[in-house]
Image (cartoon, rainbow, N blue to C red):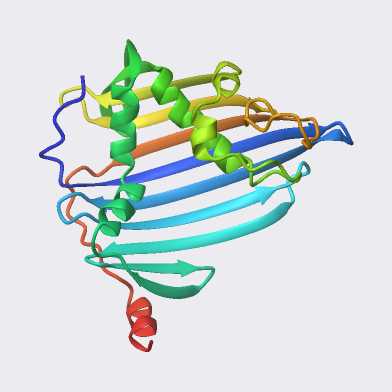
Length: 258
């Protein structure tokens, strides 16, 4: 159903994510609630495979107080990655096989196309998004796609909760039947009416982490349960709009001094 994207040269995007975890163990009650938010905007140049991206993330306690806050700005241009973290610029070389990996990390369109192609699709109507009339789709990921999504989310959550958890590898999480079957994943995707280009995605993911779902076994592992809820929204805009990616002077000045 996806229209060929070969004629798409660039796009802008905005992405927001909210992850709430409710965790408890046999020795720690009441339940500990923690929320992490991530807001991201970016410009992707598909022809030159360059990108710019700004991210603001926050970790909040159950009262909404900020436990941690971080701002990151990156520019991937040619064979260099410029990164500004909390006001400080650094530069790294990303030539060779690393270059496409760094680009793909920022290319939200690939993720959205893979999600649609790996899911069961139902057209449920039409809606206008940012002035564009779109087909509205109900998207239910197939087993392989759902496993990949859950493993990635669980891998991120295991290091973010207050309690120390047994470390599970991505492979362990991918092969976890309890993680897959104690979960619920649903997405809505909007495609532009004429070209079937992905325009917007909204997703909700719920899953539970336990010793069994993390393949941790029971020996030497305390009983715990973490209920996680993830809300994602992605909007793509300005398809093929000309907007050159220029590295800020202060980034070039700092790195030239090295």
